[in-house]
Image (cartoon, rainbow, N blue to C red; front, side, top):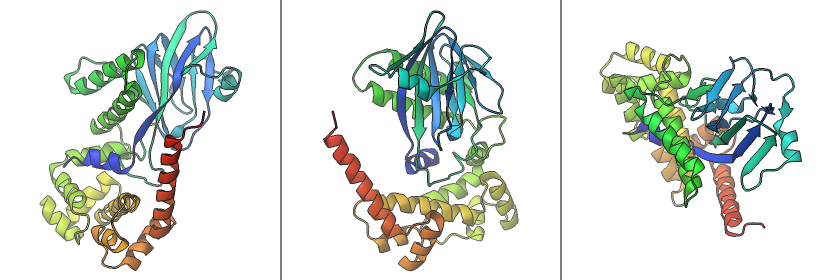
Length: 322
């Protein structure tokens, strides 16, 4: 089964755009920290430096793409000196984007960027997104192993510069794909939880156990039964699984059940008893206690809030303000 797609779907991963930036001359713009969002920048023309606190500066050239997880503060600049950086919020207060384009500075050289973000359900903390490297740079490459990323970058740049129907939707999907491809690649050389989880999915025995959990979360899995699925001894399975996934087998099972519960609660139709059973709980009270302990709110109240939020969002789309 495609665990990557299932996890990203459950996390409600969704891309969005801020604007296209047209930056001229000497510039240094500081973006404040923003909780949990994964920001991204694609260089359409020219070059710039990106600076994230505690990390080495990175120079980005035409066609390069950078992901900055956890909403970290960052500075985009024409040179290495960022001591006189201007807050982006201040720059925007003086010059709002026009037709989706933010213009700043004067003269040459010119740097054009596509700037956006990836958001996800902030209450969920899956190993695939937990502890991503603070700065991820993707570049075109002739390496066959990076063919998917290179193709996605080419498509992203073509869509960013070309008008057409569904352009925004295509850009959103390509950015989501780039993050998926990055995580799937195992973030080679990294020791972050996201890289370790990807390595776990590449491990044939651990993959069998993870597939069992994802395909049948309602089953009464134990460490012994999951070890049998993996074809390993109980002690070795528990040790390897915990080191790779960052949770014990039972801990991950419970975590995934709660993620599935949020999905089911947001959907119309299933009753509370049915949802509890589909998440491996024989009684609604036991399910409710676990859900509340995980998210700080009972499943009934969360369902009401989720549906109310969805209704408000639908109403806003149907009746947009001028």
